[in-house]
Length: 588
Ligand SMILES: *[C@@H]1O[C@H](CO)[C@@H](O)[C@H](O)[C@H]1NC(C)=O
Ligand SMILES: *[C@@H]1O[C@H](CO)[C@@H](O)[C@H](O)[C@H]1NC(C)=O
Ligand SMILES: *[C@@H]1O[C@H](CO)[C@@H](O)[C@H](O)[C@H]1NC(C)=O
Ligand SMILES: *[C@@H]1O[C@H](CO)[C@@H](O)[C@H](O)[C@H]1NC(C)=O
Ligand SMILES: *[C@@H]1O[C@H](CO)[C@@H](O)[C@H](O)[C@H]1NC(C)=O
Ligand SMILES: [Zn+2]
Image 1 (cartoon, rainbow, N blue to C red):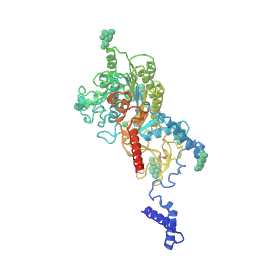
Image 2: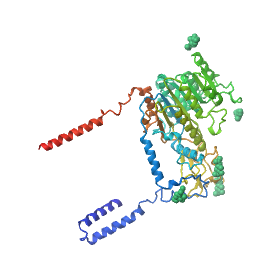
Image 3: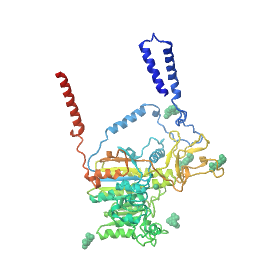
Image 4: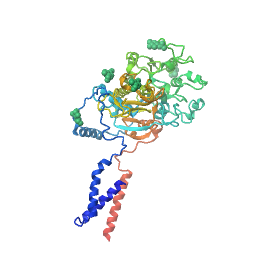
């Protein structure tokens, strides 16, 4: 309203003064005076009283509570030249980006489990600070990929996804129900009968690739029967049915309702996977057999089946060579042998966090990825490889932010290795996450502040709060001596791998987040993954690039160099019309 009045006054003043200033009467002089007054007052009124970004609020005033900043600022950052030049350099690089439109012989899908957008920002700052820089300006390797999009992760019956229904989406192109994998929304959680009906099965990009004669593989840091990798090969009404016992415990028959690991070694497309690397020996081995690495542990299966032996025997029966390895040394050796199939299970359960793993027995995600690619590259018709950085998610569930960041950095190393081993011209690499988490990076910490340990005071209770916090999870902290007071974080050691960052509410496990996740793509047709779309688009685009699966029938568009497109016709018609009317005018 004030703006309207103001505009009218300006207009009025303009008209009057331009007509004749000399004839200006007292009323008009008054108008000009009021207008000038308004102009002077504008700056004071333009910031509403309750603006959260109130002037000055963003200025860090936290010196005392915060740990020393790792400030290594480039003095050029204080000028404009640095930023303009940096921006222009990036602009020039973007102008050189080409949209590749050839056939993708190879496809690699990298899945950072729970790698939310704040996780990317946190991990990149943490990475930079480890290198002694301020951190914010750092980049994870894949953040430099030329094409980026956003995927919507909700499932058929859930606003926030779990790793099961999202795996069905980004690997099978279909959204299903939470906790189900490789089945449509018609299958309710734990519905064994519905799960066994063929019509409810979805088929994964691994099946599409195998049908086209491509080699396929999967690599993960979790159990190979965990929710995300299961999306590659399983059809199940419950992600928790990784071995027979959890099914029997529900009073269901594991012989009718097959567990995930049994599906992996027995059924298509799992049994055709040339490379399977990850954790999870427990779901392969019976309780009657000792684990090869930890003699004090046994397998988890109650049906007496040894599925590692089954997997080897099955390959032999088909005159194929197969190799099983359970430690890093054996894995390294396997790169040089020419067995057709490779199964590597490096822990009874999930593999350890990279920061806690024994580097003699456990390979890194990067090493597993390298072995897998080298094996699969021997095939003429190309390959599809699924690689999961699965422990980003697990770290978040415990509110272990530092380990979530470290796992994200390890994930980035694996992607870098994959890109180095392949060719941009024939390999489409897609990097994404299945769902977000509730971690946030908040406050106004000074530039270069330690991402883990910086504290700032609340302007309400003067007690400190940390830069990293979660909406929920086991990191909930209370002041038990004075329950009416907020917990005082100032004595916590926050740069310790098992530090649980503070949460708003207590939950045994921190939950996933419902926000969109990022998609980074490089290689043929990577540009199709720009924009905001449903998560199930991802495998359809990848399959399109490789001419496999449901998108193989959609032809590549005619070369864009061709002028025979609708824009061209529209332009010609417009010119013709203009000529016609001009001509008509001259005749009269
Ligand atoms: C953790 O933070 C403390 C205090 O900021 C610092 O003295 C110590 O060196 C840090 N430790 C590690 C392992 O970064
Ligand atoms: C940049 O300018 C600020 C004043 O805003 C000054 O305190 C700071 O030292 C300068 N930084 C560098 C790196 O020159
Ligand atoms: C089994 O042995 C390992 C060391 O080999 C030990 O770390 C672990 O705690 C033991 N587990 C059990 C259940 O005893
Ligand atoms: C495997 O090889 C043996 C001997 O060469 C042959 O008799 C048998 O039929 C083969 N089996 C399969 C499944 O190809
Ligand atoms: C609890 O509150 C009291 C009083 O403010 C304070 O002295 C104490 O350090 C607090 N303890 C914790 C764990 O926050
Ligand atoms: Zn999770």
